Image (cartoon, rainbow, N blue to C red):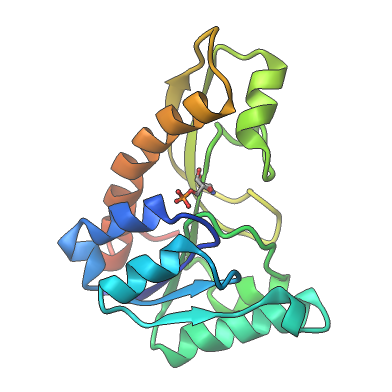
Length: 189
Ligand code: GRF
């Protein structure tokens, strides 16, 4: 079994979906956010899971920020890292500390539309289908071996909010399934 830390910057709806699955919840030993106001921190506290804030601005550069996050993860006893809307790029040194043990979820069919504006970019490109990607993290942003992808249709009257909601419905179904496999040790790079 693999205990995990979940890293989240935002509202934390993916974290909530992970907490809803008991076999995942019991292996989440830490939630880390780079924002003190992240909804994910409240979710963690309510679930009785240690929550830490590591703020980018408190460090001189990306490398030292990333190493502080890695230290927090290791101190909590986590062997794996699950990114759930973590909006900071982590340095290569972070990946080296958890080789093959970092997962990410991204709201597009990678390699299309990497980056923070994936939903808007899909709309601007006029695609009829976008989707969700769960992947192992490597040293590039929104990049690494794909574990699972699922398509999501784009409707003509969609805006970024309606499309992102439809995408998140899929995320909340597939991420807990993949993470459950990961914590059980059945999913390996
Ligand atoms: C999700 O769309 C995820 O794919 C992306 O960031 C968003 C996080 O949303 N990486 P939430 O905070 O889990 O609601």
